[in-house]
Length: 78
Image (cartoon, rainbow, N blue to C red):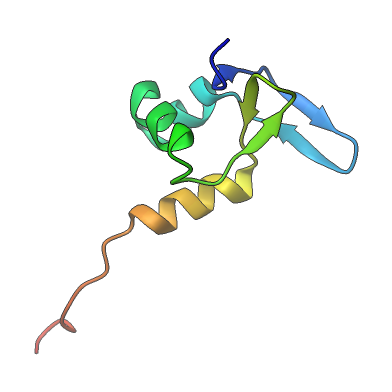
C-alpha cells in the first residue's frame, strides 16, 4: 500500500488534529501529487500515521511554506 495514503482529520492524544495529504495540499495551494512526491523523498515534514498513512500539523504546513519562501537577494532600493 502507498505510504502516502491520506488520513482524515486524525486527532492526536497530545495535540491538534492532523490534516490529510489532500487537505494539506489544498491549504497550501499545491497539487496533491507534488506534495506526495515531497513526502516520499522526505523533503517536507510530516507525521507518519501507522504504516501506510501520513498527516500534517498546522506547524508543519508553516515549515513547508517557510521552505518554499524565496527571500530577496537585495534589500529594496539598493
